[in-house]
Image (tube, rainbow, N blue to C red):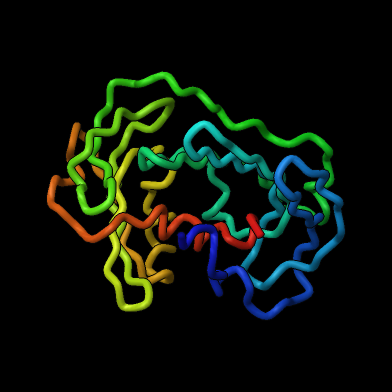
Length: 208
């Protein structure tokens, strides 16, 4: 599975004498040992974040500190029925301002909110997915990996449907769209689903 891979060049431009942040990325359930890093030229925020990934009945949690662009200071949940990714961040803009030891806790509610979207299971992209928590939008994501066209669908928080976030998606080569209304992300069949092509590209520097 192509998941949490590839590095988005936007976050790794040539370093400049700009913001300095604490940096660390824990192994699942591990301790995040902090170091100091000088941020790339376009990374104008320090971030402290928690990422929780659910697959079936299993989950793993990672704590992260790093440099980040302001547009990625988000809190969100994205869910395709098989996998759910929760991300909670706290950002600041002064040198070493993310040195605190506490990490934000994502809202991990699994209570259905009444929203229904299409999701993909194999080549069937007509499966009903009952959205949970703050997942009030449907999404559709398409991309190309090794010459194969892939599609993913599901539920997503409003934060990933913002204009600022959409402007960054053009750099990944994937197409990501949101809509409101039950089953608004279309019922057409597609090639095998690929979990969250886009989101891991934008956040991969945090999840390594």
